[in-house]
Image 1 (cartoon, rainbow, N blue to C red):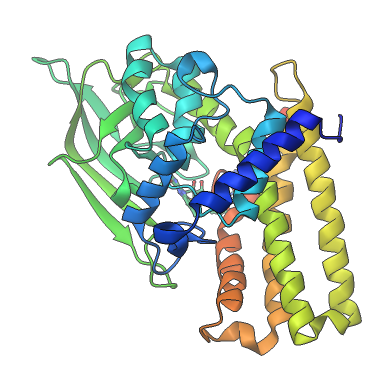
Image 2 (tube, rainbow, N blue to C red):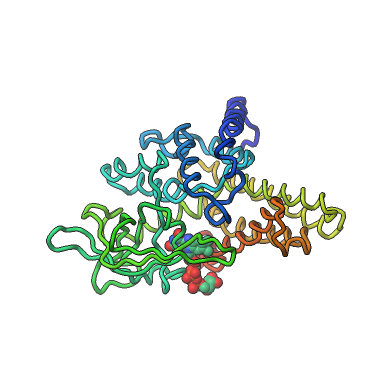
Length: 389
Ligand SMILES: Cc1cc2nc3c(=O)[nH]c(=O)nc-3n(C[C@H](O)[C@H](O)[C@H](O)COP(=O)(O)OP(=O)(O)OC[C@H]3O[C@@H](n4cnc5c(N)ncnc54)[C@H](O)[C@@H]3O)c2cc1C
């Protein structure tokens, strides 16, 4: 692990900084520092324009191979981009699910025709995707999926019936990848297929789930005779579990490592708030802040080490990353509220307070999505340590 930046990397960092300064202004100013569609007042149409501005500058698909239309950046350059993006106030990425989850899966498991059809829209910031995995009785126990897919006997099209839930940003997306049971009588992880389905069609209705913040980040998605083309299964029909798990590997793995920069930024906000209101003089809070800073440094070295494993395989230490960062951020959210004291309990129009309140509220979800804490511990025990199920 080489922690020194090369002259080339330093120049790249300066290039990203300059680009952010020059572009995140004017019409895009309202997006500065927004977490994403969960932030009250988040302007989705503007965020899509922002995605397109990023795309035009070549900042979308930076980790994809060049042959797939990406920039083929090294992991080190990707980290630098994410660090400077967040430091420059860049908003949460609306194209995340398409760019970071579906695209790598398409590149590894899609047909050339599927890649040619879907990668350009993701790369250009013009097509947005949602993830249709969870159902009312299939969350941690994803193999319990009940949504059904069958072939139309005349057209060969897939016809899908069922319900998905907690589908992030489906109300803003154009397509959804749906894990569905396609073999009659199959159980658990057998007989599933991952389908690429257009969201805007009469067989699909989307009902936003209103959160206590007032915004609606995720949705219920009802599929009632929804249709997609015969060729739009990702991987072989009946083998969807394998592809769905590969996709989750991207969600739990490398794609989250760029978050380090966001965490650093949030810690800096918290320290600024502690200085401003005097909490920084409280010895116990000072210790907790210092501990958070040390733990974040450890997380960063861990991320760089995992990224630095260049044999292509995910080292077993990588299994611990999601558990470690999500718990760190949840604790940072608690610390932020303790630093703010009673000011944290009210919405007072102070933008810095609002960011820390958002941190606290948002961090509650981190130990749930992409596999809950308990599921992560199961994965560490079984996959990283080889313990029996
Ligand atoms: C912010 C956010 C965004 C999300 N976005 C999406 C999305 O876009 N698409 C999508 O498909 N899903 C999405 N989800 C859903 C997410 O994947 C599920 O919430 C998650 O998998 C947990 O499932 P569940 O909510 O059904 O909880 P359950 O699986 O019912 O779990 C309830 C509790 O039981 C525990 N538990 C369950 N099984 C075990 C076990 N075997 N051993 C020990 N403990 C266990 C869990 O850890 C948890 O504490 C999102 C969730 C959140 C919070």
